Image 1 (cartoon, rainbow, N blue to C red):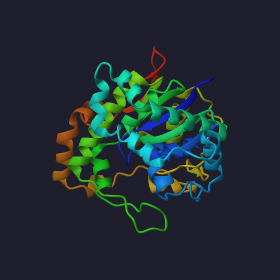
Image 2 (image 1 turned 180 degrees about the vertical axis):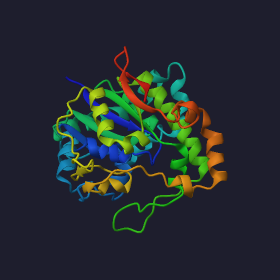
Image 3 (image 1 turned 30 degrees about the vertical axis):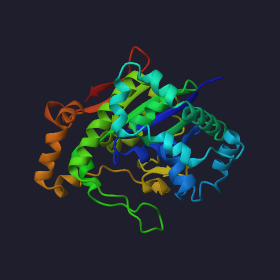
Length: 328
């Protein structure tokens, strides 16, 4: 049976992953499903809405998925959540140990079996060539790489960590119509997670995925059409029906995203522009703090030093994956 093609978008939060996923979800043959890593706790236990506005249990798309995968009776969410606890950020170093693939394949067998059914059902219910999963966690990408039924393409999105830290200092409404807010995260924690998720995302992408590529938020926000065209070319997909208008705004229809940044609910005509409020809004001492933690990868990704004016693009590598390329 042909493998299910999953485009996994990784990267620390507030880096443009939600918007990229939603745009790709507008393309025929692409199914944007949000952060499936949290499907069990946020949708089957919690009440996070589907991107279409309905609850996931009442959404016609997800009802079809649950019917195809488990005849409408999915495994107990508590069990899936418990298995998912083996895939947290603190477990990332374990994935690098020789023999870890065999170990986790054995330990997580029940969880992986259910994930195989889940993604195969999404492919069928959505008639999708590509499932766009923006779970972001590198550890969950590792789990998907253990599934022989999945062809994994990993797209790592990065953003200047000073901009990310500034964004995490400001709350966002968690769900439309509710008072709950996404938690705020301090600069030290944000910088540490930005570094660990970027490093592990790149490591996993190069070693565990069929294809790997990296795109910077700044390049995507400055020229979104070109960035999306590059992603499609990297995937070997045609770029004939992009949802962009002549003025470079994007037309977004509702998707069936399960959870994620509340911006996933935005529809209609959306203007994409670079958000650089951090340059004047983040105090100098906090900029220095973030830079002191993140400077090695900031140089690697073009945020410091002589590469700061150059952009990163996507280029195919000889082994069939993709490498980071620098271009003017």
